[in-house]
Length: 138
Image (cartoon, rainbow, N blue to C red; front, side, top):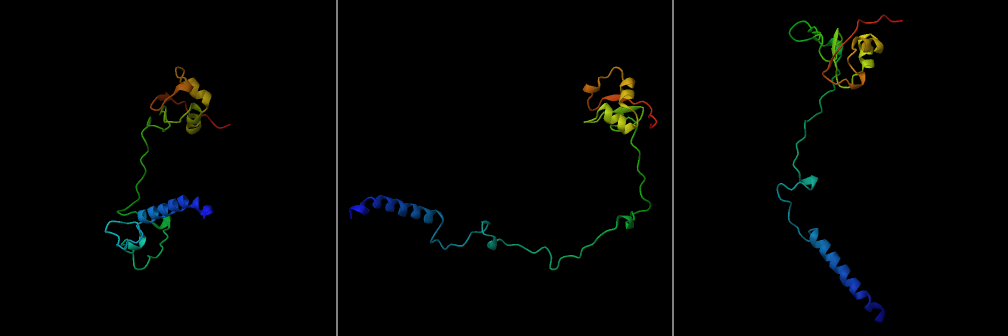
């Protein structure tokens, strides 16, 4: 009996923990889930989205005709609008003299020469700079 005397506190602790777990988990509690409790997916009321799934339709973009007549013609952006090449260019976020030169068909050096009072390293969005005429390709 002396060998088991040390196990008595351990057994009592184990029974207490099991009792606490069963009580916390609602063991022995045969009540139905109340309305609004959505913890059990089997008790959540759902409706199927359709009786039969719809057929797949693949549209050919070339076969789509606009409603109301001819297709609209794109309106060119106003000169000097942000990101639009012209004699003046409004800087957009992320622009550099090199990226503007590439976009507008000129060189970085020509951009620097056309804007002598502008530091290319400190340009900011919304700033307006001069854009030289496009340079012919070599």
